[in-house]
Length: 81
Image (cartoon, rainbow, N blue to C red):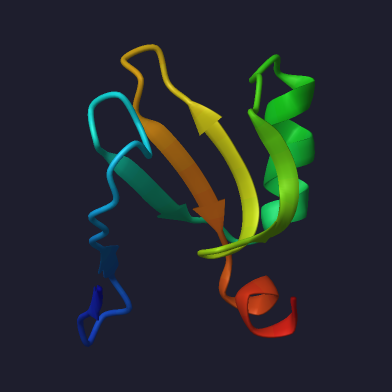
């Protein structure tokens, strides 16, 4: 389920067993998925996978130190890819 307000803020809610040890995944909208991935990788951020087509759309995914899945997306690639 996704909810978006009039200011462009969106929150995605998903219930899937076995997705993460704690059952939580967070999505963050960025200006450009591919550019953000390259910049964060250059700074040493380790991703589970790079930007790719996924069941939820297009983007990279990482797991934070607490086990939360973090997914990055942008509006352009969600429409194009």
